[in-house]
Length: 63
Image (tube, rainbow, N blue to C red):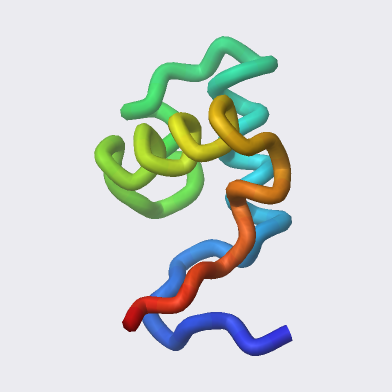
């Protein structure tokens, strides 16, 4: 897999992070601390997951 050099999480890591919020009841701030990212980033991935499911957690072109 070719992960973007600035991506802090792989798609599997994003899924674990999102599920900790959606299924586990963790706050976005707590998930951000646990997964070493920001609450804004957690919110972005949760939104994509809710809209597109696991497929929404894949890497996208940055162009």
